[in-house]
Amino acid sequence: MTQLMRTLTVDLGDRSYPIYIGADLITDAQLYRPHIHGRQVMIVSNETVAPLYLDKVRGALDGFDVASVILPDGEQYKNLGVLDQIYSALLEHRFDRRCTLVALGGGVIGDMAGFAAASYQRGVNFIQVPTTLLSQVDSSVGGKTGVNHPLGKNMIGAFHQPQCVIADTATLATLPDRELSAGLAEVIKYGLIDDAEFFAWLEQNMAALVARDHAALSYAIERSCRDKAAVVAADERESGQRALLNLGHTFGHAIETGMGYGSWLHGEAVGAGMCMAARMSRHLGWLSVDQLARVERLIEAAKLPTQPPEQVSAERFGELMAVDKKVMDGQLRLVLMHDIGGSVISADFDPQALQKTLRGD
Image 1 (tube, helix red, strand yellow):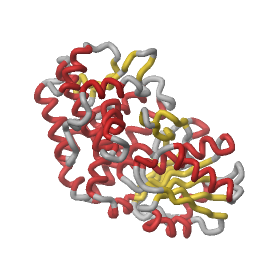
Image 2 (cartoon, rainbow, N blue to C red):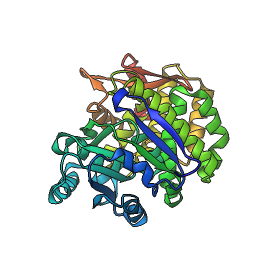
Image 3 (cartoon, rainbow, N blue to C red):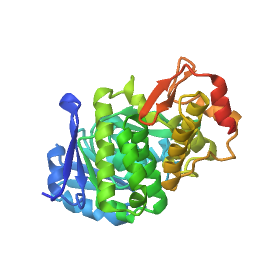
Image 4 (cartoon, helix red, strand yellow):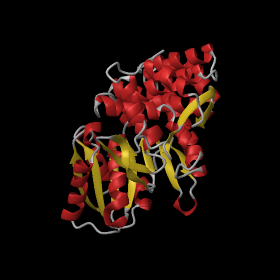
């Protein structure tokens, strides 16, 4: 067994599963085997990650009937048409209901492989092997799977929990700087939601994280996963508390859709979206000037945008936010902030504050 590994648990009763965090885990056969119940394994990866890690994962799965499907890389390919490539590969190899999918890649691969697993033969098992910071701290944990639609991000999907998450921190060494920063957006999110102590730690250690200090990154990943695992255990299907994890995402999804999928990375859009949520909270009188400045400084220190793109007008923002998943009974719900580490879900806000935020006032 690989040394210096930390194991967390997402507590969902008989569907609980472990999150393994550490370096060089991707080749550890003992992490995979207890979670594979049949003989057939389909590795789903993309054209960027597969050349780096596909053979290593295949080696760890020696003894199983292993096949793979390699998808194009990018948010613009997270759609039903590309998803069909996974189904075709499963059918061509005659995979049965005891097969296991292994999602090897970032958030797009995890979401698509997870949705394929949720829907192939009405549900098969899958394992998350996230290779980006964003997927290690957020999208691989919690069972949200799905694809985008031209009219809205992640509007087609299912809740489907993995058998385990294998977060190999060594894979971050090959991550481009822009992708690393995108992942830091989701790390910052946990501090803003309900962990002011972690936010303060991030203020002190952001330079080390951007410089890829291993100890700092390992701590940030573990703390983020602990925070998310606790929220998911309390509210698996986002009927209440879990919606807090959408801080910055309603604004961010509008940016991604408005700009065209892949133009802005998800984490970049969330970074700007969190700043917009903070500014709206300031307009409502919920955040102080100093608190708003702290949010913007930390997001800027993570080398993320703090402003939305000029190409998405206030009117277009409004149109896109109106079809967001957080709209219920025609009413938009937003995650806003009463404090750093004190986020709330609110549908009862002054619409003028939203309009000021969208106009950049």
